[in-house]
Image (cartoon, rainbow, N blue to C red; front, top):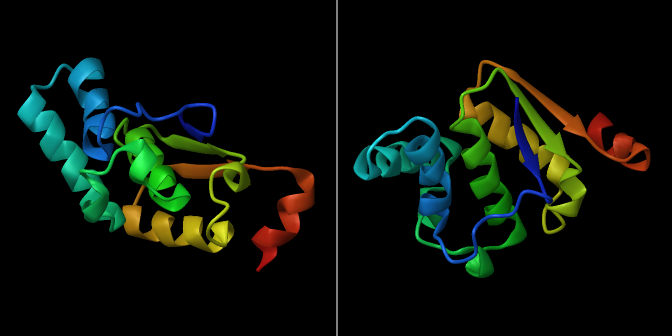
Length: 125
């Protein structure tokens, strides 16, 4: 399982690309160049290649979410859990935003969203 959560922050001193590239670098033991290539490809797949050089403090909440999502997706796990997206995506209508990202990512696994019960009506749109 891969997880996207406000409790799993990005490294503030690293760019979005570097935050994502850490995963293949340390978990799969790829070299730095290959890890960066995979991270860039993931951002391009999500339609957010332009945030690659931004650091956490320079990102909007939606951009920060995409960086966290890319970091989770690069793990290539069959199950992705998004934990309380409203705590991370307060600058966009997030159920639609997540649906849009899910279609771009072409992930074959399952995306599950865990949110507060009072937000469930938002997903029925």
